[in-house]
Image (cartoon, rainbow, N blue to C red; front, side, top):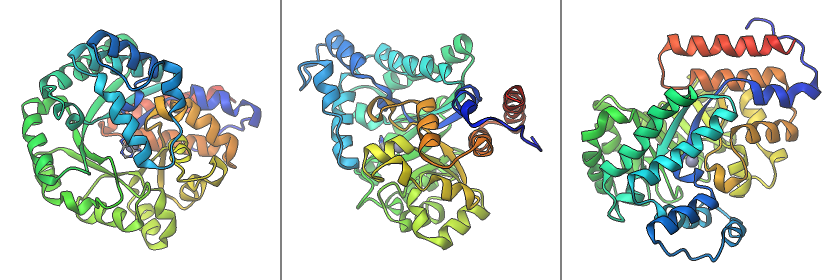
Length: 346
Ligand code: ADE
Ligand code: ZN
């Protein structure tokens, strides 16, 4: 869209909710709402450490990434059967559709499940079936990205890749998540090289809590196509210049960053500075069941806290569509819908 229509500031939340967008940073295990955790626990006979939904929700007060991960992995322990993985992903897709997400690339953490004795085939079948139904029943396009847990060894990542390869047509890429500090990207250089040689897309969490050096090595050693989070790049002008020049997408998760104490409040978030410096910033929900909101909540709260306008809304939505791993013709169709949406707010 060459010239954006003038949009009254009071209509901005409505526009943010209505505009078509892609979600590129959602851990599907982080979409497990407490109600569904309790339902699956009862269905599977799993004993939880909390007596009620309310007690579990009250435990969602985090001081850093690790304090969250401890509860997040405990929550995932209720996932045992194919139908559990399906139900979790389906619940996410219903919420994403309501937020006008047209395309979602879902992270999943197979090691969290296979290390408990759940078969890779069970995980893949449930998630893949939900993706197929999301397309036919909700009109949402989606893809799966397998994440390696970085607190585990590279050898364990190689084993996980081997277990997943029989299902290679059901995921489009690999990522790197879990405890960042002390586990730099270069720990996984060889397994990422192998994944690239297999034609998989590669992304990695870097610069969430970790230093800018981790973003440099994610780019140079892992050769990632997108950086997940990446907000610590704000500390390194040379890195910011490179990210802007190469248009490396950053999948930023504002509510997550506040819940995990990366920022004291949304008003302190670096998102606007990164966007204005020319970086390909996108907004995403990360672990929405734990961090207080799905896509539209992230957009609306971030715009309420920072000096962002309709032009920024357009840039963020368009960046998300262009940073997705779908073909250019499909992206162009979504961008045309985005343009129509903005035109309808004239
Ligand atoms: N796994 C789930 N959410 C995560 C996050 N925000 N950072 C790293 N690993 C994660
Ligand atoms: Zn994440």
